[in-house]
Length: 547
Image 1 (cartoon, rainbow, N blue to C red):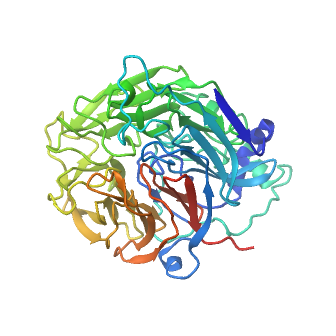
Image 2 (image 1 turned 180 degrees about the vertical axis):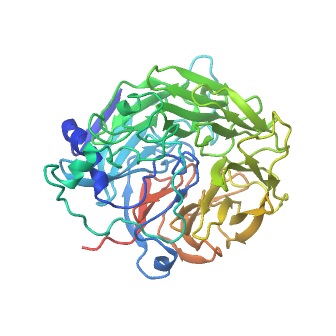
Image 3 (image 1 turned 30 degrees about the horizontal axis):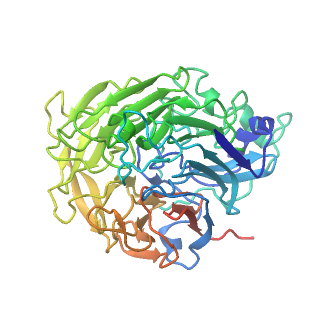
């Protein structure tokens, strides 16, 4: 049973007509729709209307608001990273929304301009004890909601817009609403031409598997918010609750868009929920709730689930599988015969693999470099392995393209994921959080041989979360945890802004954040960053909107 509380109940018909029209207004970069922002898990926002290295060296970036939710922590877990929807329009006008999971089976929607709760749902928790299943209530098996929400996400590579460009966004120039004769307003004309934008639907992207607006199965992606224009259903968000059910809700009011779908065993420890090409994917670890360690796929049309079971150990990291532009999944494992495997989309059949000789500690990140789709992941000895997705090495017995030397200072890379971006000069960077800093590497091409060369190491940041890149600025947050296993809260989280070229500090939040973070992370867009803490508080940082 689910209790639905709404402040504003919106007309579904209004959403149907206007959701695509919002894209004409221009408020910033693409939405943060899943763990790591995109299917590649890059944690990179390519453009932003306000944040840049120059602006961060001037006064003004600050705490904008904070909201304390009614949510009971499960072990060390509190709130999941926010998933965002910018430029949404309904009967109340343009809105910007964030969707957050609470560990005690709560889902919250927040108006990010006004800093207030739009609606909230509470779902009945899974039974504490299941017959024949050992219940392990520990940081590794916390129960409740363990993975962030998601919105439909394309696997096509986003356009690279590195560096310091701002792009249209909050405070950007206004556009005329007058269209050509006989076509009505510009927004309506664009909807009719299928350029709806992000009123809850993914942006236009190159054709290909998972490319928004071009689902592999004609019409099926449209049924769940894929693409703009008339004939599309209202936008939805997805949550995976502790009973193993995939919940699909309208972004406008939190009401069910369809009946919940059985996905996982109850009380599984799930990470990296994503919906791509009308299939939901998630990884599970630590055998929680009796769920096999591996990757799960749920076809949203047929409601059929498929599982790839790891023969080694649990999937590594917190972001789940990373995707190539063709929809291939890449998942790293830890324990036993640790490996990085490539899986076919939907069927999860194993295509290729790579054995590093050490446990992986991060989820993979995928990115394009000089015509190649590369995969990077970190191992327990402090190495980063760089692989060519065209041949991981398992079937051809190839060595990795490059492996950084083991580093005792970086050993035990934080169990999150790497991040990657390309700067204005075309240099490809990879960021790795360690126990005490953020380490930056450059991907180099030396006479056709790819390598990774040291870039910089930040000043001390204790147990940093996965860093994010916003328009050339690195944001990293210390978790506020302590101990070799990060299992004990030591203090409060601190958010840092770093210069992307040098790692030098530009700004920090000081004592503003009042609690620690475990299992959460950063997200952001349109000039604002969000971080949820263990005590159920969501913090928003950015530059104040001019009035």
